[in-house]
Length: 133
Image (cartoon, rainbow, N blue to C red):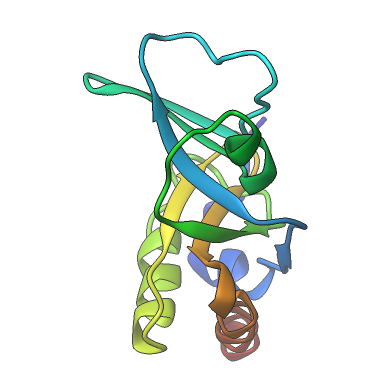
Protein backbone atom coordinates (compact mmCIF):
# COMPACT_ATOMS: atom_id res chain seq x y z
CA UNK A 1 0.00 0.00 0.00
CA UNK A 2 3.02 2.30 -0.25
CA UNK A 3 2.42 5.55 -2.04
CA UNK A 4 4.54 8.28 -3.56
CA UNK A 5 6.75 10.27 -1.17
CA UNK A 6 8.62 12.58 -3.55
CA UNK A 7 7.04 16.02 -3.27
CA UNK A 8 7.76 17.06 -6.86
CA UNK A 9 6.13 13.90 -8.22
CA UNK A 10 3.20 14.27 -5.83
CA UNK A 11 2.52 17.84 -6.92
CA UNK A 12 3.03 17.20 -10.63
CA UNK A 13 0.81 14.12 -10.56
CA UNK A 14 -1.94 15.16 -8.16
CA UNK A 15 -4.70 15.33 -10.83
CA UNK A 16 -7.30 17.10 -8.67
CA UNK A 17 -10.85 15.94 -9.30
CA UNK A 18 -14.05 17.56 -8.04
CA UNK A 19 -16.51 14.98 -6.71
CA UNK A 20 -20.18 15.63 -7.41
CA UNK A 21 -22.48 17.20 -4.86
CA UNK A 22 -22.42 19.59 -1.96
CA UNK A 23 -20.97 18.28 1.30
CA UNK A 24 -21.47 19.58 4.83
CA UNK A 25 -19.82 19.07 8.20
CA UNK A 26 -22.20 18.01 11.00
CA UNK A 27 -21.87 16.63 14.52
CA UNK A 28 -23.99 13.92 16.12
CA UNK A 29 -23.98 12.68 19.70
CA UNK A 30 -22.42 9.31 20.42
CA UNK A 31 -20.18 7.24 18.20
CA UNK A 32 -22.72 5.73 15.79
CA UNK A 33 -23.66 7.10 12.38
CA UNK A 34 -27.45 7.60 12.32
CA UNK A 35 -29.48 5.58 9.80
CA UNK A 36 -29.83 7.16 6.38
CA UNK A 37 -26.46 8.93 6.51
CA UNK A 38 -23.52 7.82 4.40
CA UNK A 39 -20.54 9.93 5.49
CA UNK A 40 -17.47 10.28 3.33
CA UNK A 41 -15.51 11.21 6.48
CA UNK A 42 -16.03 10.61 10.18
CA UNK A 43 -13.97 12.01 13.02
CA UNK A 44 -14.51 11.02 16.65
CA UNK A 45 -14.13 14.05 18.91
CA UNK A 46 -14.92 14.56 22.57
CA UNK A 47 -17.85 16.81 21.55
CA UNK A 48 -19.41 14.17 19.32
CA UNK A 49 -18.97 12.40 16.00
CA UNK A 50 -18.19 14.75 13.12
CA UNK A 51 -19.65 13.62 9.81
CA UNK A 52 -19.04 14.92 6.33
CA UNK A 53 -22.15 14.04 4.35
CA UNK A 54 -24.01 15.15 1.26
CA UNK A 55 -26.08 18.22 2.01
CA UNK A 56 -29.30 16.44 1.02
CA UNK A 57 -28.68 13.74 3.64
CA UNK A 58 -28.04 16.32 6.38
CA UNK A 59 -31.19 18.21 5.40
CA UNK A 60 -33.29 15.01 5.42
CA UNK A 61 -31.96 14.17 8.89
CA UNK A 62 -32.49 17.77 10.11
CA UNK A 63 -28.82 18.07 11.04
CA UNK A 64 -27.51 21.62 11.44
CA UNK A 65 -24.45 22.81 9.51
CA UNK A 66 -22.94 26.11 8.49
CA UNK A 67 -20.29 25.16 5.95
CA UNK A 68 -21.11 23.82 2.48
CA UNK A 69 -18.11 22.34 0.73
CA UNK A 70 -16.94 21.03 -2.58
CA UNK A 71 -14.97 17.79 -2.22
CA UNK A 72 -11.76 17.55 -4.26
CA UNK A 73 -9.74 14.34 -4.43
CA UNK A 74 -6.06 14.45 -5.34
CA UNK A 75 -5.80 11.37 -7.56
CA UNK A 76 -2.08 10.79 -6.89
CA UNK A 77 -1.44 7.87 -4.51
CA UNK A 78 0.31 9.71 -1.71
CA UNK A 79 2.16 7.98 1.10
CA UNK A 80 0.85 8.80 4.55
CA UNK A 81 4.39 9.78 5.60
CA UNK A 82 5.04 12.02 2.58
CA UNK A 83 6.30 15.43 3.61
CA UNK A 84 5.07 18.72 2.18
CA UNK A 85 2.03 17.88 0.07
CA UNK A 86 -0.54 19.24 2.51
CA UNK A 87 1.53 22.38 3.11
CA UNK A 88 2.04 23.04 -0.61
CA UNK A 89 -1.62 22.50 -1.46
CA UNK A 90 -2.90 24.56 1.47
CA UNK A 91 -0.40 27.30 0.63
CA UNK A 92 -1.46 27.49 -3.01
CA UNK A 93 -5.11 27.69 -1.99
CA UNK A 94 -4.37 30.27 0.71
CA UNK A 95 -2.53 32.39 -1.87
CA UNK A 96 -5.77 32.33 -3.88
CA UNK A 97 -7.76 33.36 -0.79
CA UNK A 98 -9.32 29.91 -0.37
CA UNK A 99 -9.74 27.93 2.82
CA UNK A 100 -9.14 24.20 2.78
CA UNK A 101 -9.94 21.29 5.10
CA UNK A 102 -7.70 18.30 4.35
CA UNK A 103 -8.40 14.65 5.11
CA UNK A 104 -5.88 11.93 4.30
CA UNK A 105 -7.07 8.51 3.23
CA UNK A 106 -4.81 5.50 2.79
CA UNK A 107 -4.53 6.21 -0.95
CA UNK A 108 -5.48 9.82 -1.60
CA UNK A 109 -5.77 13.22 0.01
CA UNK A 110 -9.20 14.84 0.06
CA UNK A 111 -9.80 18.58 0.22
CA UNK A 112 -12.99 20.29 1.28
CA UNK A 113 -13.25 23.85 0.00
CA UNK A 114 -16.03 26.39 -0.06
CA UNK A 115 -18.52 24.93 -2.55
CA UNK A 116 -19.10 28.18 -4.41
CA UNK A 117 -15.36 28.51 -5.03
CA UNK A 118 -14.53 24.89 -5.87
CA UNK A 119 -13.81 25.80 -9.50
CA UNK A 120 -11.25 28.38 -8.38
CA UNK A 121 -9.67 25.79 -6.10
CA UNK A 122 -9.37 23.31 -8.98
CA UNK A 123 -7.73 25.95 -11.15
CA UNK A 124 -5.22 26.86 -8.42
CA UNK A 125 -4.37 23.19 -7.86
CA UNK A 126 -3.95 22.54 -11.58
CA UNK A 127 -1.62 25.55 -11.84
CA UNK A 128 0.43 24.18 -8.94
CA UNK A 129 0.67 20.81 -10.69
CA UNK A 130 1.76 22.44 -13.96
CA UNK A 131 4.44 24.49 -12.20
CA UNK A 132 5.73 21.31 -10.56
CA UNK A 133 5.85 19.21 -13.72
